[in-house]
Amino acid sequence: MTFADRRLLCAADDVAPGAMLRVQPEGLDPILVCNVDGKLYAVDDECTHAIASLSEGRLQGNIVFCPMHGGSFDVCSGKAKSLPCKQSLRTWPIEVSDGKVYLVR
Ligand code: FES
Image (tube, rainbow, N blue to C red):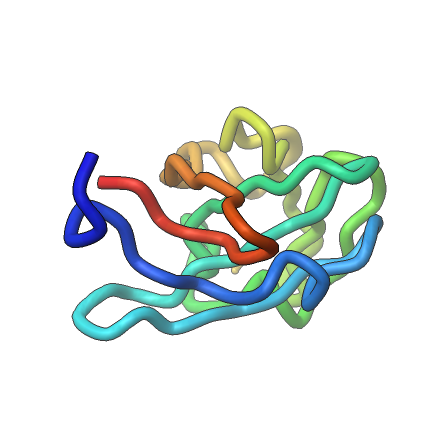
């Protein structure tokens, strides 16, 4: 894999265990980086139910709760977990290298 195949999202220690961070890579929609028990995951930041930034919601374990209507998603799989959310979030492959988090294409 070449360096051009990946894009820097943030520093790994920008996202503490149990925390999440909204990042906006150039040319892409905002991505939510979540730390679940020390492991990082990346999903789309926008809720699939309506227009809301999941970064303004709450992360509990591997579940993110939308601030708008309280629907939820599993940030590891992207799957919708509670209504009114039905459609999964897009998940993004990431790689952590030298303390930095990269989106891998
Ligand atoms: Fe997220 Fe409605 S906008 S649950």
